[in-house]
Length: 144
Image (cartoon, rainbow, N blue to C red; front, side):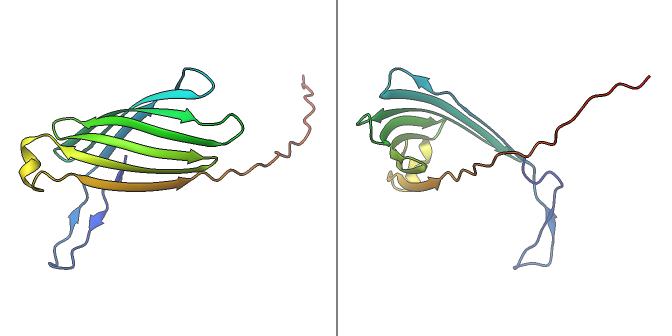
């Protein structure tokens, strides 16, 4: 949930201030490991702001090229309900993930961009902190 405290939105054009609308987002994914090399991940995303809603479903396959190499290539398809189909390509190299997607409008809104879709690029790095916890020994001594 974003804007849970409904902060004020300031405008540079006018002196009016309004409150931001609540934004709800839900997403989920499930890794279906078929064998040592192939994984299929179905996933979904739902979000809403004010009266606008978006629902998206995707299925991405991930293939490990070599057993001793951390590189995994990915390809998949997705659909944003009532709007666009998606073609997804990417790669994972250890903690680094990079991808490219192309949205193809299939709705009546395709005349907005002349039928041209949109490219999206993304990259993410997963940082890991390995730390051993310091646990103080506790002796339980009941009192009567």
